[in-house]
Length: 366
Image (cartoon, rainbow, N blue to C red; front, side, top):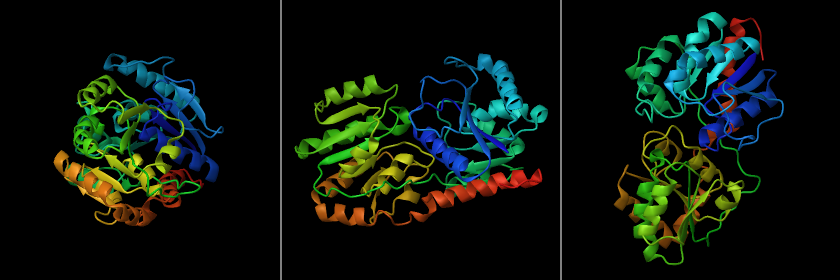
């Protein structure tokens, strides 16, 4: 079978692109399926995350193209690629892409998998996302959520006419994971967007850092909110202590030199940054946003889960961990707790079982 992952732009540096490439690379290496990517467009010549050279990339438009006014043209261009490349299964990396994939099912015969990277309760940036979810419930060949919580939300809110599976994002453990208990660096990471709540982070940092002059805070990632965040950081007199590093090539080095990882997101699907920090044995502190953090962090064992949006509680949690080196070491030692569900072998098995169900329908096997 030819499995094609459909992305907005697979060259981006976000967690969605990261996990999609990780799984595609594993499928390419460990099955005899043909794997490829198709993007609406690619803004960068090379993807931020390394893609197996055996995996081909296609793009619907040669340059960045946005807007519903291109809807019918986009559907036709996607159909041409699916037909021309004999794609058997189209995996929509973002459920909003179902709006282009589902209309071409009948004429191409392609199977469509709607892969939810947010959660059922959120419709970030696109008001008609609710409609595409209902459409997928009736027309997709399968829906994949990142958490059991989200799977249950789909089942209780929609009349599903297709299978639905919860398959977590994987953790790829670093070659050597060691924790620096003497570090005075707080780390956060993600796209500089409303979803990630970095405006709330600046508010928290403004109450934490002045009381701990030997500590610094670094945010990795880029995005449209940078100008606003830069202004707020300057207004809080944190210019040299709360640093926006932008896109970095070697995130591992930051994980290795950090004392803790803090996430202030308003909502998530299953946050890759928390999984990566967990793999690097960092103590974790996160808002209890829907969904993901409460399934990754065992509160009081390997980190702290803070009520969503409660910046004062976040300040208290960070201060406690800064002041308690022993607790940081204990949280680090327990970082592997409940990690089995995020093992790549477990995640890949879920994807292989799903894809095999389509393969068996065609009389084949992987």
